Image (cartoon, helix red, strand yellow):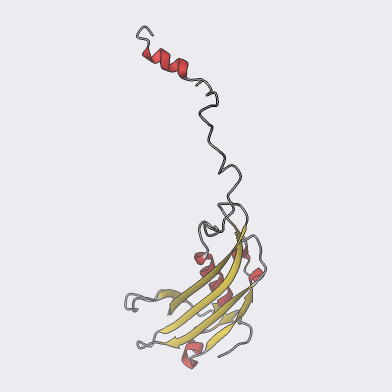
Length: 175
């Protein structure tokens, strides 16, 4: 197992032949597209990649990602810290290869002769794991102003409906 900083590019076929596990962290600020929807880019992503070959000699990469991100709650518009956990198992195949014979449960990762960009893979996985509508748990969320305003009492004078004239015209058969 390698606990060094995560290398930016790797050859998954060579790592799978050796059964290598890469474990480390990436600064959240380095993942620019991921930081766009966030309210704060401070923090680190804990990354673990296991490379191996399965029974069919397919190169398999299993990833585990953990990070806490700060977003804006869509209920109260305050900052919320959300834990994000993502696990994925990829079958690494050559570009244009037939993927019909792959076992179920693998996501296909087509790779040419170029090395695999691990940082881009981490960023894509975390983008997919972000919540569509970030929010606090309902019991933790502050109610926005105006939600719990009291209903008007029966003693208050009701306003006249400006469209009541239209209702009278509708009833009048001469119009």
